[in-house]
Length: 144
Image 1 (tube, rainbow, N blue to C red):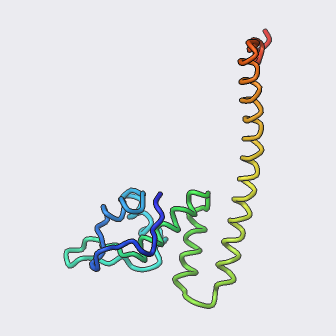
Image 2: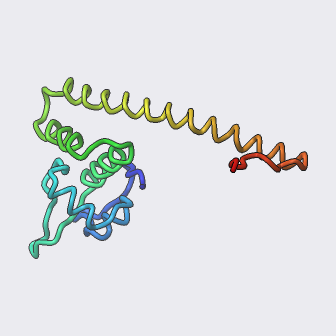
């Protein structure tokens, strides 16, 4: 996943779907899916021949969607967020509430992962110490 920075230079006519996929780190299939699923907040431009052309604003939005998905936000929540963004000004409190709820859930999952990582760290330290002492036998042997 790449961060799309404001200084990223794109041609004025935009980039192809393949180039957009490469720049955002998602597949062409995912880009088409985001559009079909109602996750894209502006219509994707098309060439006279009907081919998609992505602009900086599109790539930045795809980056946001990808990050929300990577943190576990359900598609329906991303779609709701996109709908609110598309509706324009006046619903910022609702957008904030949606993001805060996701933030809280993500923080809770992160805390749980930290607890699991602490336990794994302890096991790794135990194994290293015992191996260094030359007495690794019996670290975890199932009893018959």
